[in-house]
Length: 502
Image 1 (tube, one colour):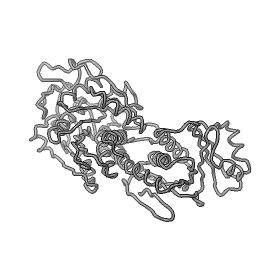
Image 2: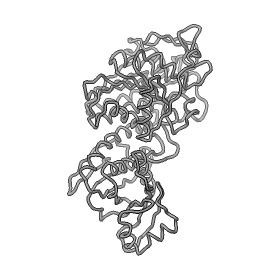
Image 3: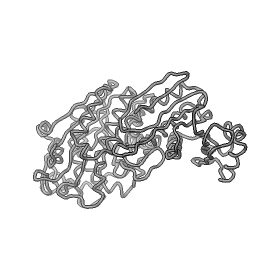
Image 4: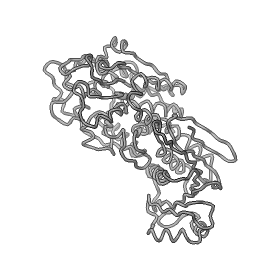
């Protein structure tokens, strides 16, 4: 599967992406595609480019349709007419843009909704009359369309049929340049979505390792620690979580060194399936536990995105991988584990395993890379989901500057976050160990974050809880059903802005 960028007369740049992705082809041209079967045009609340011309070509059919639908051009509204008179197009889709200047997240979301509006149609070529937008805005529209067009149809008999969008723009070179950067970020999002969507028997820690190794060709240094190495380093928390599975645990380190600055470290929870362990999950929710590696998927996707666009940043991704399974070897309630940090942990619940995986992963990042800042991301707690639902990620940090930076980054890419408090450390006290792995009372999202705080040392740190954000049960904007890739765009936007990379 390829996404194509075209510049007149016939210069084509192609970029291969994950084989299970069915994103659309994007082209930029100085005139509309004569072979298109659908025309997309935009109307604000007061005007539209070429509206009178197109209305005349339809014999007034277009204006009558807008009047009948009481179309006022407000943002995100649509009117579609079929078989328009005296036109080569089989349909015309009019999209409302409102009267104010659209910002980055609004344009991206609009692009996604346009793709959704046309997704079920028997059409293959779409002309987009985008002359009223500047090259950056056009690239964001295309970005939204591509993101929404992702389709994980690996296990479906009927495959997604690709569409081609041709954008009419004044400066094809500038539009292509702007989109190329976004396209590189898309590859990271698509990778994270692929990993999150994959069935758990096909994505064990060993399989995740193989996917990570593919980043070598992008200049990423990938290092893998096997179970014996993990045990030898004293990473007993990570080792314990994978102990009940056939494959055992792994630690993957993906280092993209695009600059000589001190590295940023991002740690991701990679529990490729979470049964709950000995205290096994009993609800239907267990079917979604293939997504409990979405934090690690976001880390790997962000590293791929940064490497693809050759960003001048130094970022190391550390991903602890395990299957939390049930067997005679599984860790059990009442066990005491000694982490690599030297902190001992009483196991009070085997379904609170993600924080154990992260504890040793964060220690490894600090000890071996001495990062300037440490970020972790994980589908960590039901408490976060109950507090913020699926639209907001939860962030925890005592560094208010970091919090503001992530809030701004989230707004820019439609992956918004909300700060939740740290505290309730007294709830983690254990009579036989340094801490418990669950809080004895208190809000679970906060006590989990406070648990992680024991493993950050003096490094500036922010924790992102994405429980509820990794899988979408219904589509919206640029996000389809299934794996969302949440965190890839958030992390890349923050990293690029943190280093002021243009």
